[in-house]
Each structure stands twice: as C-alpha cells, then as structure tokens.
Length: 466
Ligand code: NAP
Image (cartoon, rainbow, N blue to C red):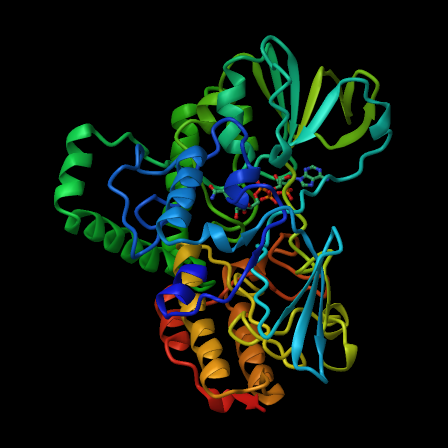
C-alpha cells in the first residue's frame, strides 16, 4: 500500500506498527522450519522479483529480509511509527476525519484510515481441564520460546495443521519423544522443495524474464487448482485425495498410523498442506501420533482417554483467532456506530475493503479476501491500487468522504455468500474460515484474476461521495 501511494506521488501518510520492527507474520512466526506454503516467485511483489531466493519455497528469515529490503528500497521506513499499537479509530462526522489512538495514548488525525492488520496474528490457545496444573513449560507456535532447548526432552504438540507440520520435522530430530495430539487429520501433499543453485540465481539475475515466467507459471497452476475448491469437482478432488493417500503409504510404515492420517473431510475444505518431511517425521521411532481426545492436563503431562503422556514441554500449534475481524480494535464510524455492532450478523463488506457507515476506511486483507489456491500478495497489490484511486479522488476532488452505498454492499455480499455455498469450504462446520454466525467470512470464492478485474478501476457510482 505504502509503495503504491508513493509511486503515485502521495507521501503524506504514516504507518502505525505495533512492534519495534516490521515484518508482521514473518516477524512473529519464528518457529523452527517456518517457511511459506506458496512458492517464493509468487509470494513476492510482481514489481520486485528476487533472483536471490535460496529455496523454491522461502524460509521465514529470507522473507523477512526481503520485506526489509523492499521497505528500504522504496523509502517506506521513514513513514513507520514503531511501537504504536492501534487500539481505536473513530470517525468524526463534523470534521470528516479519523482519530486514531495507539496503546501509548498517542493520537493521530487522518482523512483516510487503512486497517491492514492481517487475519492471523492473535494466537489461539484453547482451554483444557486442569491446564494450569502442568509443571513443565508451554508456549504457542507463534510465540516460540527460543530459550527452551528441546534436545532430549519429552515434548507434546497440540495441533497438526499448517504451522505444526513445518516445525514437527525439525524438533523431532532432537526430542527424546514427541507426541503429536491430532484432533483431525489434514490433507498433505508433497512440497517438492529444493534449493536454487548458484547457477540458477545467476541466470535469474541476468535474465529477469525467467523469474517472471516462473511467477506466471505458478500463478496459472494456482488458477487451475482453484477448480478443486468448487464443490462439484468430485473426480478431480478424488485424484488429489488418492495422491495424498499414496504419499502417506509411501512414508508411514504402520497400517494403524496410516489410517489415522487420512482426513474425514474432503480435500480442500480446510487449507491443503504442503510438506516433504511431515509424514517422515511421524514415522520416526521417537514420534507418536495420538488421536485419542485430550481429557485433561496433569502436573506431569497430558491425559488422553486411554493413556497418560509424561511431558517436559507442551507446544500449542492451535492456530489463531481469525474471527471476529479486527479483534481488539474499537472502530467507530458515522454516529459512533461500532464496527463490531455493524458486523454482529457477520463481517459484511464490499470487495473485502469497504463497509457502509465507515467512510474513508479501506481494509486490506479484509473479510472474504483470503485464498485457498494462490498468493495473498496478489490480492494485496490489487487492493493497494484500488485504495490509491480512492485516495486520489479524495485529494484531487477535495472530497470530504467516500462511503460505499448500502445497496452496493448488500448486492455484492449476498452474491459472495451465495457463491461460497458452492465452495468446498462449506462442507465442514468448523474451521477458522467461519464467523460466529456460521457464514464463511474469510475466503474469497473466485480466482485472483477475477478479483484483479473487479478492483482494477473504482466505479465511483458504488459510493456516496460528499
Ligand atoms: P490452524 O490451521 O487453525 O490449525 C490449528 C490446529 O490446532 C488444528 O490441527 C486444530 O485441530 C488444532 N486444535 C485447535 N484447537 C484444538 C483443541 N482444542 N484440541 C485439539 N486440537 C486443537 O492453525 P495454524 O496451523 O497455525 O495455521 C493457521 C493458518 O496460518 C493456516 O491456515 C495458513 O493460512 C497460515 N499459515 C501459513 C503458513 C505458510 O506457510 N504461509 C504457515 C503456517 C500457517 P482441528 O483441525 O481439529 O481443528
């Protein structure tokens, strides 16, 4: 967003950053093995190809370094105000501006407010019976405690999804025993990762075309994989389910464990996981897959229906509080209406960016813009271009406020919800894709190309402009 604003000659903006450095998810998730589940060529800006990626799927430290490099290159850092965690944003009807307040009570006035706070940054730590009785140490995967040495320790991991499958193979190499508490199995397919050779990097630097080509190829593949997310594609889905089952059979020796690893839901209904080494780790002698329900914690470990597991450390890989959106933020629009109240029946939005009653507010990675088949960077770039057009309109036209029409929002949102019913995510009741009212609130039901087209040029007839 910041890069795009500057490109269009808009420099009078600030970025409130809650931490003391930039990086968002790539600053916070430092667990061993943290890496992206989208190939680097597509998980990077379209205008800033990087010939120096070490791996096809980048590791956390290199993505963080890439972000830092981009912030320097495009002159963004001077706009960032660190340690300024936003707690409230109130629209003032009289003065037509937003008043933003950070945790340290700093106050800022702004004509435009862009919440770009992400969907997955409040760790979720479920409650278990007698949880506080456990005498060992515990932490969440997004708050990894690097002071704890897991070598030759007995470790329990609760959860087995995107985060867990990345660090389990790493810690399994050093723990004396590792118990993976799995509530539901997930679909996993090979990542087929590999390091790039020095020669490949050199070629990419001399001929940037190869990087563009690689990006295009991965993007098109994602577009094809989108088909898997449509409920009706049963045959295609079965092909992938069988592929995943063969992957299990190839890597897991015990027939009982193989069975436990086969999901009961349809391929694609939750995030499909990519890993070359997760099943190999589960197959290790020191690793045990526990599928019995956790009954309670004890002072020395975790008790399941049939067994007590003695543990020194427990790691929660239990995900994030994705709903409600904007958790912890007191956002108030016209006449003081709270966003939480406006969204009591689900996070209604237009294009995942605007909400009626909340003028000059444009969300990035807002509701219904998450993807199951491609890179979120594509959505962010589309959104930044769209929002920049709105800001230009406000600036050039001396406009006080721009606010999506209720009718436009309702038509768009109803259509999105109708389409979501036909998506595979709608076949399961529980996932982080759902809001409290049961609506699929996080994901976008189309391809990225469709979203790019839809947001390319702002139709100002969709807005009330004052
Ligand atoms: P998640 O997908 O929400 O998975 C949470 C795990 O914890 C699941 O296995 C869940 O089991 C389990 N769990 C939750 N509550 C539990 C309870 N009370 N008892 C037992 N098990 C419980 O979280 P995540 O793995 O951190 O991933 C979240 C999202 O972050 C991903 O979908 C992805 O979008 C993103 N992510 C991306 C990357 C990347 O490479 N780019 C890496 C990591 C994460 P159930 O399945 O039974 O609910």
